[in-house]
Length: 461
Image (cartoon, rainbow, N blue to C red; front, side, top):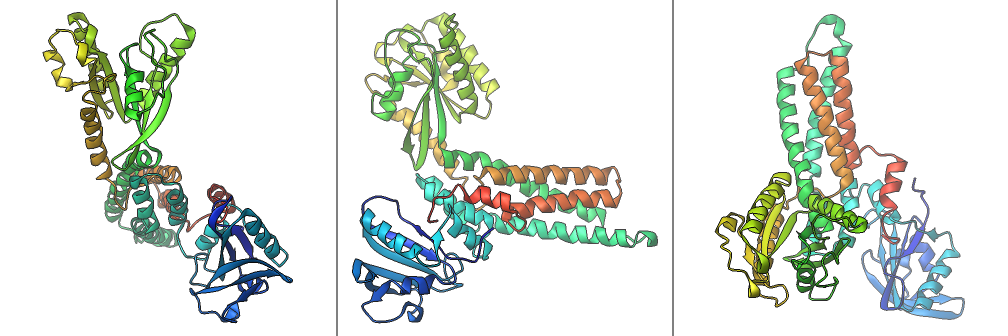
């Protein structure tokens, strides 16, 4: 696991910049930096007031490397819970490397990815969920994903999980007590009360599990599939939304043979627009593969934008589309369907009254006419989505997996009670649920799990 040694890392991106930050954490970190630092105030770093900055020079023998600012954080009031020093130097790569190499001459090594945050977790500065949210915060690239990560950093659903776990531990203790007195025929655990508790846990778990759909979309971007028959203007619409020529536009049907993705930010949420191959019957093997991928992307999307060519719309096609759109709604009931009538500037005279139940939006992707109405429709969906963000919203797939495992164990306990299964078997399932909840917050962990989690962090965090 983590040794009680001294680690260092460049905490700012490598390369040339105005300022760079080098971090050193560990029991001798202050004295190590003191060996190479000459402060303008002639105060030894060990005597420097915590959380205060001192100006001075990094010197290697008689050579001045740089003029720097040094901040000292003393344990336990630091990010890692250990003595920690931050060196703010100029952003020259030569200066960065010179200071790092100088520090490595002492009892210090380069930190592994996420090792600073791992030490913070192991020293009780944050739970595992909060530690994981640090990586999410660093990688957040939208207002909504930032808000989600900040909620988790502030504790998120930690209290809810701890409360549920505590109540389960109490009941497990009572059941164990019953087993100890099994010869006495004494009942300590009230099964009616346990059932009530399990119902409450199921409700809370389901709420957390269901929130993953929202959290995952906000974290990774809102997938929006643009689908329709060939030459309806799918690629033109993608280019118009992105305001660049991202997809090839041609009058030749079947130009798009694979999915093309790009994203823009709408209302603080990254939207991943996916231009798909036109849906039609074809003998072309490559185009057929593209069409298969279209249906796959439809199933993975939060919004499906279905485009109809308004210029060639007749009664037969209208009847076909009404049936087809109904089929999409039946197949993807939880996916928002937006119907687009494209090429309104050269629209046919066919009545679209029967299509009104799908609330079609008339646009011209080529002329960029009424595109704002489409964006407004997407914006309304995003507003509803972001309104669902709260402290209990989860976005981490590891948390989602553990919550589902806990849910399964609780379900087993409920079945066991209903079937009057013996208390010793009941206790096994309760203990397993307790284990999964503890693994979620990090109260129960092992080297392999922690190593996997923190290896995904950047070095210096």
